[in-house]
Image 1 (spheres, each protein chain N blue to C red):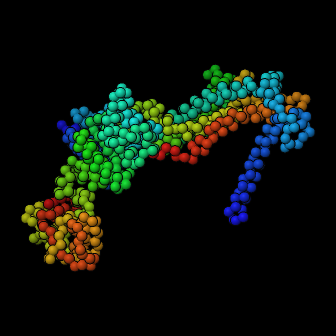
Image 2: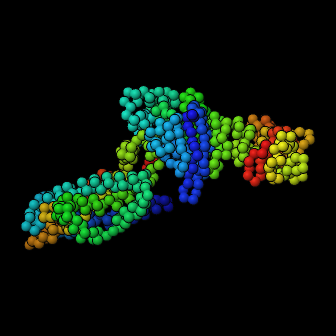
Length: 284
Length: 353
């Protein structure tokens, strides 16, 4: 064995160790969710299920009780989808439009506006709770999905604008000038030239926004009504609903269900995520 | 009235004057060169013609229309950018047709224009490719094709060859010249390369510090440079500049009398005492007598050789055809005719004679 292989082996050993360290909780969740309660009670945390089954998944999805309501996570999941998809789409679109204006159509004071927007990125969420509930009340969309969508769109605009603006700064100004000379309008340049070149940053922003909005608990718990609670709130209520026994297998299945969409988004679009974060992308 | 008329253009950013009063008139079909060192304002001026920038005062007319405040798209111009600015997400054919599409030209006409341009520039085989898959020279052609497709009143080029390697640059320069001879579209071409300026231009505006130093044909500019700056900027190797004083009977430099003729002596009477005496390298000849000196450097280029000699009045570079068959350290004598000399005022740099 020469020096190089020793280094290799060492490297792999360390990497595997870290991977195991980070994946163990995931493993425990998956195996526990496949066990029945008898095995959960007397087996060890790490043992494989002797009789694997999806009963706890089915219960978590459509039979578990949160409070007095025993319809499982299903309604919350649907709420979350109905909230996250429009909120992500709208905040991303507005962000790209803002970024386009702030980088390619600068006007007097545009840098100042950008600085103000940046402030929004670092503003703690708790600060907006009271004024926002006031505003939602005035608009008549408090305790509804529309209210939640609006909150997430507004809260997301600073970061989506930041992403797109910084990406568009890298697009050559001459492209815009050439399009102007070719007779394209503000919107035509955006739609025909800028948007088609935005794929990497678009993917980054979509993942970022989806993860944030899907995983949000604070806004979900504060601004939702009885029938518009998102899945994070549902999961919390499900795990905290006291009954005679704590059904760990159902809790684990529920947590996995709540996490699946973000996992799915990462797996589908993850390679663009890394690419979009690192690459300057459109030289040429 | 000319095809392009630039009148009294000034541009200031606060206290800084970028352009200090530019007047240029170009006839239809002419090839105008704006040349100068970086920061001279040539690109700013081009952007104003293109409608991408606005002057502080002054006006720009294309044909008989005042376009000073007109948006770019209504000026009937096309521009080739230094970076080519091809749309990376569109194929070559789409790039060429984009301007026509924006002007709502029907599809069959657009296709015909693309075919016509592709044939003219020999890029027919590239039409389906994306710009990313093209070489530098091919991108340059596509950028020109995009400008040609619309058959504009005015062509603008912003240093279009500066991203190419030396060999390709010479090739593309020739193509631009041929293209202009064929289409006879009025053209404004910005460059900092004096060779491009001389080879391409019908008329050249040499700019420095926001002012046009001289506006004339390449021959005017080369043979009668209006200022010391123009004399030094145009021509390679650069003109030899000898600091000198007006003497009783002619021009003296470090005790050496420099040749002048009657007309030059006449002109000198109006100027100051301090002068610059300029000589083009090709006007210096080696002879048996004349200004003595020692060769300090020899640069053969093949067809001609540049020889630098240390003389009593300073370093002088001569340019002779072929191989000079001389060696560093050789004692030589340099001669020239008085009428080849260019005399400039040392203080203002204006041409005296």
